Image (tube, rainbow, N blue to C red):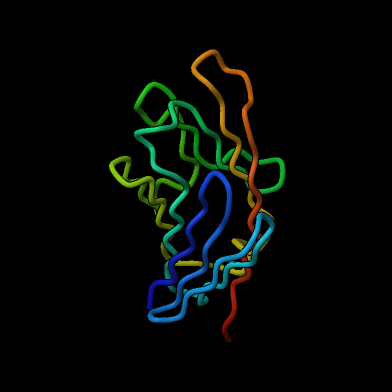
Length: 122
């Protein structure tokens, strides 16, 4: 099954099938080992530049309506039309703190949101 985590500019929502909880920045998202998770980072049409990081590692960078880098492109997909970043084949190494860093068109940081992802399973 696919877990869906939504990271908006002001809050994060965790959804699991019909289960939905709205929570503040710093929320937890759960994924199944070997499964997939959809992270709705934002409405990409409204944000011109962002970085998605895990710890100090840059995972995904979006700038000028294109992907500048995606270090897990072999098992992920970014959908610009709705701002969703899907990570497939989840492993325990995917657990950790993720950070969305948003920039204006001049490259000045305008905000950050964090998400703790926990991968569970045998």
